[in-house]
Image 1 (tube, rainbow, N blue to C red):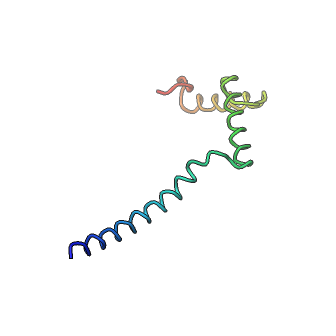
Image 2 (tube, rainbow, N blue to C red; image 1 turned 90 degrees about the vertical axis):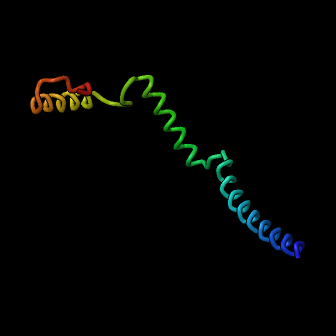
Image 3 (tube, rainbow, N blue to C red; image 1 turned 135 degrees about the vertical axis):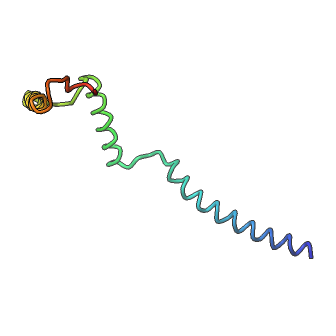
Amino acid sequence: MVLQRIFRLSSVLRSAVSVHLKRNIGVTAVAFNKELDPVQKLFVDKIREYKSKRQASGGPVDIGPEYQQDLDRELYKLKQMYGKGEMDTFP
């Protein structure tokens, strides 16, 4: 009788462990696959390239003189609207 319970418990335990391992192996296989597909690799490379350009320039990348003019114009409008305070810093 005790032996039958042990075998039944063993069967249930084996089944539960089997299901658990199948689920986890499926998830970890994707997580451990570090090789990127070509499109994803290209995207990540462009992001890294942009980050290095941004750090080198200290601001927005590949902007023209019209960007700075637009920025100055908008800051001027904000100063006229909301007062003469420093708009570049947090209050």
